[in-house]
Length: 159
Ligand code: 4NP
Image (cartoon, rainbow, N blue to C red; front, side, top):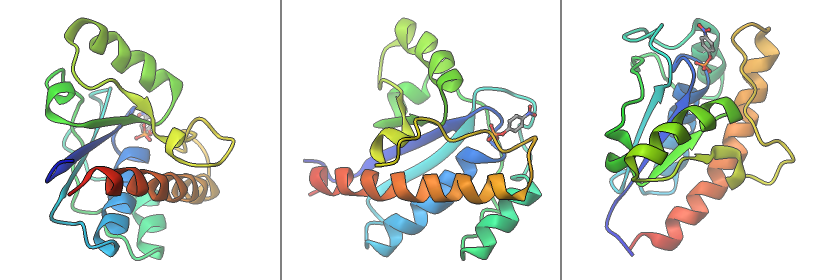
């Protein structure tokens, strides 16, 4: 059991999927009354969008569900994240391969596919960047479902 727990969501650009996961999971955690106990952050394996706000389509899709992610700013994954976070949750197999390569050298928290905490048959949160608005709705649906499973896991470990 522990007093607090930290969760890092990782995608490629940190402007679509992982900031959406950060926003959705924060809402889920706060509704469960655990906002003070769970630290949540997100980042990307790539550096193209560092310092930028989430994609406008991701902001709009989240806003429709009462979630404001407009204040988030992209940052790149760094090796120290593996020792700073208790959970490192990636969106797809490419993210997993990229972070696993660093984990094999540096150790720390082993990255996992986020959707393993959900019940759907999907293993990956599909990259919505080059698609239409529906892709962003699918991202939020998959993320919300996995967030419920992750919350249940954290509730088992928090005092
Ligand atoms: P994300 O989506 O990894 O969910 O933030 C992407 C954002 C930007 C790019 C790719 C994916 N990009 O190639 O610029």
